[in-house]
Image 1 (cartoon, rainbow, N blue to C red):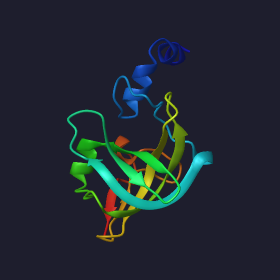
Image 2 (cartoon, rainbow, N blue to C red):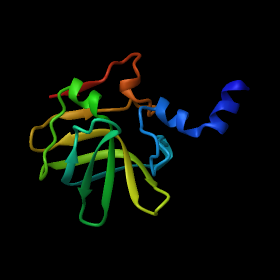
Image 3 (tube, rainbow, N blue to C red):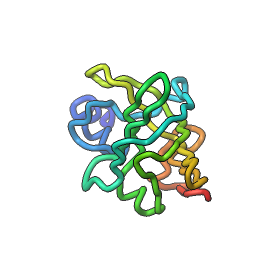
Amino acid sequence: MAVLAVALMFPGLVAAGQGWWWGSPVTPGFDRSTVIRVSGTAASVNLEGPSGPATLILECPRDTYAVILGPGWYLRQISAEIRNGDPLTVEGSKMMDRGGNLHLVVARVTNERTGAVLELRDEAGHPRWMGGPPPGRLVR
């Protein structure tokens, strides 16, 4: 009960627990019922932010998505490499922010340029950076 009360009084703490930042326009979370797989080109890649999640814009033939990868520190830890212009296949939970913008909270990214598969969430949608088995990994 106490945890529920804190979550209702301070929703930002719940978001921070998922590894996101204060003031996010998106309620961070991963909903398996909204998972899609799309392919497109990476633009505006930001893996180095001092706070908040690593992000990119994925330009697809039909839609453009603001892609939320995970904490920048985690992507650096697993030596993730994504550049502007990289062809990517992204599997993630589709959601809209409060402003009506389309987002993907990523589970898996395949970089077609390098062949690397970046697994950021397990099959249940649990963030790999939160610890516990199996550990996060970059598959080459």
